Structure formats: C-alpha cells, structure tokens
Amino acid sequence: MFGKLIKYDFKSLLKVHVGMYLFMLVESFALLLSELLRKNYPNNVFSKMFGGLLIVMFIITAIVVFIVSNVMCILRYRKNVLKDEGYLTHTLPVESWQIHASKLVVSVLYSYITAVVVYLLASLAMLNIGWGADFYILINGELVLEGMTAFMPALMVCLIISPIAFYCQMFMCLCLGYRMSGNKDVMSFVVYIVMNVVTQILSFGLIMIASIAQFGGSIFSPEVLEMEMTEAPVLYMNIVMGGAIVMSILIAAVCYLLSVGTLKKKLSLE
Image 1 (cartoon, helix red, strand yellow):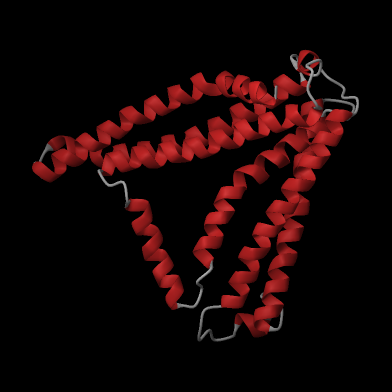
Image 2 (image 1 turned 135 degrees about the horizontal axis):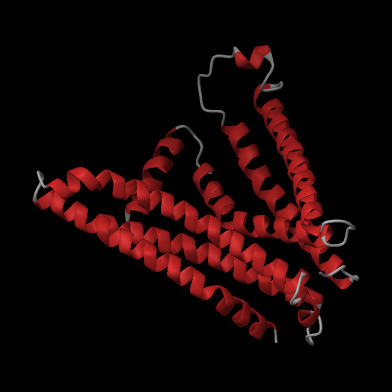
C-alpha cells in the first residue's frame, strides 16, 4: 500500500513537472542553436542579439522550475493531508507515517529529478555532458592545495540532504500550524518563522564553536578580524561543514518525528 501511495502522489504532480521540463527543453534547443551559429558563423545576428538573453532566460527558468516544484509539493501535502482531501486520506488502511513518508519521498524525488533534468538540459545546450565534473575537479583541486580536502565532498552531501531537511521542516510547520486555533495557514507561517529563528541560532552557535576551535576566539572579535591569514582555516571549515551536515540530519529527524506524531493525533482539518 505504501508503494501505491508513492505512485499516486508521483502521478498527481507529474503533468506539471513534465510541462516545465518540456519548456526548458525548448529553451535548451534554442541555446544550442545559438551556440552552433556562434561557432560556425561568428558574425551572425541571431547569436549577437539573443545569445546572452537566452542564457539569462534559461537560468531564470531553472530557478523558477525549482521554486514551482517546491511550492507544488508543499501545496499537495497541505491539500491531501490537512485540507479537503484529508478526511479521505486519513481513512485509508495505512499508518500515519506512511501517509507522511509517501509525500516526503515524492517531494524529495522530484527535487532530485528536477536537478538532473536541469543539468542534462544545460549539458545539451553546451554539448558537454561532463561540465559539472570539470567544474568540481577544478574547484576541488584549488581547495586541496589549501588543505581543505573534505570541503567539496561535504558540500555535495549537504546538497543531497538539503531537500530532505527542507521538506521535513515545511511539512512539520504545516502539521503544527493545522493543530492550532485560528487561521491554519497563518499559524503554519508563524511556526515556520520560529523554526527559522531556532535554526539561525543553532547555525550561529556552530560558527562560534568552529571559530574558537580554529582561532581561539570569536570570529567577530577584533583580534581575529585583524589576524593575518597565512593558511586556509581548515579546522574552521571542517567543523562548519561537518556540523551543518549533522545539524541538517538531526533537524530533519526531529521534524519528521513531530510531523508523524502530530498526524497520529487529532488534527483540525479544514
């Protein structure tokens, strides 16, 4: 039954995502045409007039696609679990964690699919599938020379787990907000603000810990600000990146447990 929930949720969001991907595909072909014309006919009017504009449009569209995908997944959770369809959803012969987990799996999956699609379409426009690996090797090589061998792998881990942490937080805010009296959406936003304040406080604490470990004092202290850097702050960056990964995992786990626990209790559905 859990697999059927995932399949149903995935199909419910498929048309919107396919439509956005097809639109980006058209832009990618236009970019490819512009690049081919530029290489073969350097003085052609099309590339000179529209080449830069097409690149900007592709980047803007990619950002919009990510935002729309996130919003659609969140609204899908809100409608299917907490609003009109919630009554029917909660009568299904499944556990609360399965309802929540299916939405989480599909949302995260669409984030990964969107990232892969954007990368492939950019590769098509450049006729270079390996540009991402080249960029990674270039940046990582510079960092390795500075002694920060773990920075780029840690950054990749952060990018992989960030959609999970994001949706865990958003779904928790909705679940808690819909348990409160008053306007449910407003209360969900209030919970989101509080969650962000707590996250920022934890992040600031992590920076302070890394600063004390690396420099022996606060990074904002006059002594540290005036310190002449002779080498990369390896320990500082390792603590910050490692701490960010651990903190994201812990926050995601706490948010997931709070969401499931809230769904098991009586919700004030709309």
